[in-house]
Length: 152
Image (cartoon, rainbow, N blue to C red):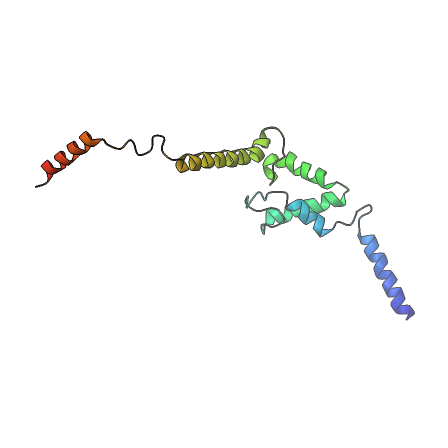
């Protein structure tokens, strides 16, 4: 029993010594959340969290290292933005010129709905003059005469 307890204490001491001083425990969930906001530079259509590429794996390692060093998630994203530019973010920030990316689709959708409503309203209205006035007796006689001339 004493030997098992001594072995367990020795194992705990070895693990504590192996961890670098001041290194914080980084949860994989946090790494995944940050990686989900960054674009993989190889795949470009996948996030770092979802990409199977070796580059994405290295980027996840950098995220882990920076978080363990004490950086906040915002500082980690800022590091990648500084290195790769705003392109690296899957969702562009809602400010400046990038605001157009967030606003234009809704404006276009609204304009399209207004156009459809106007066209439906225009098509559902009856014609302005209607079918026209009924022909008088002289006009009817002329129509019958011209029809008779055309028949063989």
